[in-house]
Structure formats: C-alpha cells, structure tokens
Amino acid sequence: MRKICFFLHNISDHGGTEKSSIALANELSGRPGYEISMVSLEDFDEPFFPIHPKIKTSSLKISISDLKKNYFKAISKLRAYLKKNDIDFIVDVDIIQSTISIPAAIGIKTKVISWEHYNFFSRNKSIIRRISRKLAPIFSGCVVTLTETDIQNYKNNCVCKRPIISMSNFLETIPQETATLNSNIVLSIGRLNYGKGFDLLIRAWNSISQSIRKDWELHIIGDGEEKENILQYLKEHQLLDSVKILPPTKQIQEHYRQASIFTLTSRAEGLPMVLLEAQSFGLPIVSFDCPTGPSEIVRDNVDGFLISDFDTDTFAEKLTLLMSDDLLRKKMGKNAYAGAQRFQKEKIVEKWCALFDKLAQ
Image (cartoon, rainbow, N blue to C red; front, side, top):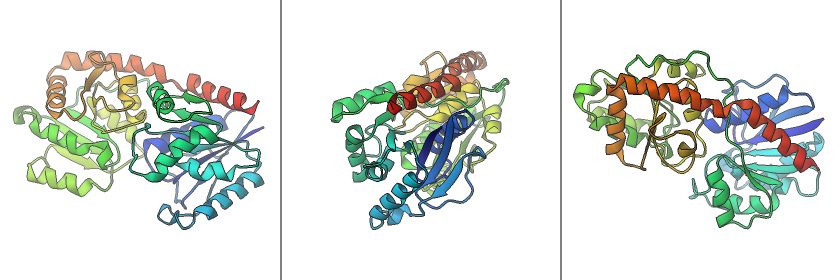
C-alpha cells in the first residue's frame, strides 16, 4: 500500500490549485494500492470541492497570518503526522509548502514532492516563496511543474540536484454536450485579485463599441480583494448593465454551457484549469499570452486568440471579432473541444503513478 499525503494551505479554498490537487487525490484514492490523505495548514470548514470519502482530511490548525511565530510548531506537527501515519510521499500543493514539509521529513521515510502551481517568476514578492523555489530543487525528492517552459526556468535559475519534471493539469471529465455558442455571454472565472487581471478585462470591455456591447454580457465568476475596485470602475464607466460579477459556485459547468466565449487576462499563471475546462465545453478563448500556460493550451488562430500581455486594444479587437462572427466562433469552438482531448485524466494520472514508482526505488 502506497501512502500519499497532499499538503495544502487550506482545503476549503476554491481556486484552480485546490481543484486540480483534489481531483488528483480523488483519482488516486479510487485506485488499488493507494491510501490518500490530505493535510491543511489552516483549519478549514467544509471543502469547496468534493473529496472522495476514502480520503482522510486533517489540519495543523495554524493560520497563515501566524505562521512566522508558529513556524517550528508547524514543522513539528506535520512531522508527527507523517510518522504516525507512516506516509510514503507528501505532495506539496504549491511550492511554498516545501518550507514546512522538507524540514518535517528530515530523517524519516517520507519523500517530498514539491508541486509548483504557478510559474517560477510568479508571486516572487514573497521572500518565503523565493526561498522555497531555491530549496526544493536541492532537498525535495522531485519538483513538479505544470509546463515544459517552467522546467527550463528552474534549471536556468536554480541549483537542481533533484529531478524537475512537468505534469499538466487534467480534466476530470470531458462533457458529451458542449456549449451551443448561441448565447451572447462572454465568461471569465477566477479570484478577483491583481494577478488575475480583471481590471485589464473590464478596460478592454469598456473599449468595445457600445453598439456591439449592448447585445452582449460579460459574466465574471469570482470573489476577492479587488471586487470593490472592479465594481467602482463598472459604475464610473456605466458598465453595470453589461457586466455581472457572480460569486464562486459548485455549479460552474452551467456557466460554461451558457457562454459563447471564454476570456483570460491574467498577469501570470501556472497552467490555468479554467482554460482547460473552457475548451472541454467547446468555448473559443481570447487570452493574454502570459507566463505560463496559455500558449500550451490555446492554439492561436485555431481555437482562440493569444494576445500580447496587457495589450487591451488588441484583446478588445479579437473579442469583438468573435462576438460578431458566428461562423468563426463555432469553428474555433469545435477546434477547442478537439484540443481538450489532450488533457484527459488517464494519461496524466498514469504519469503520477509512474513518478511514485520511480521515487520509491
């Protein structure tokens, strides 16, 4: 029996990081020979995403705001958990978790897999994150990135004494029925924070001709610290009639089905799950070509448009084109659905199983 523990910041968070890691844990728990557990650094309420009933969940009950003064306590509590439960592998859900898991696993059987969920240059204002990206390639058992691009980023910027490999996120299911693309809805999903760039999206939306915009709606699904700033901009530019800010939902599939175009204006990503999901529903995509991820998902001029970072004018132009051209929209949507097949779960989960087998040797 292979005992694997996923170590998260907070199990009840509703981002792509949590969604993709819980999906992997669920899939492994349904396979013979695996015993899966999940440990949350912070205390948590009900998980936002469903967790397989066989998976044991627990918490170190340490708030991220108090981690500095409770750092050694976090290490001690995690180490005790790993020893008590005889864990073979701990998978850091976000590279920053390795600053706790690596010292916690010193001298015991547990091997650390540090899973980078963003990209090497993302969120580097955090000193702890910068340290974790330097330590993991030396002291963990393996670093897993989401893209091939990030393998090279690590090798170019770190002393890499451990393997650096890429594993893309996967789609849990690929719908049999795709969106009809007949509605006048543009969709975007993500945390309402600076990194996700919704300020850039609504700026592009504002520049689209009123004669086109009046027939369409932009639906943004998410919550976060930038919400009030976004609402203020919408109010100042008289966009409240055409832009809807909707809360995170467990019924996100319905929003994909009802949309006709998907947009992403992030300043940085890892491998955005929302793009994979949008493709699986046959939605054409307009996305900034930010580091990293969109260029490994969206095929420019085939199933969507990749726009140079922060070029809101070109973004608005390509979005307008898809809004105005039904035939192009449906052609790209068909190509998007075909492209989604690259991210079926079976092949990617098998790669994870092979990694566990290799590191166990």
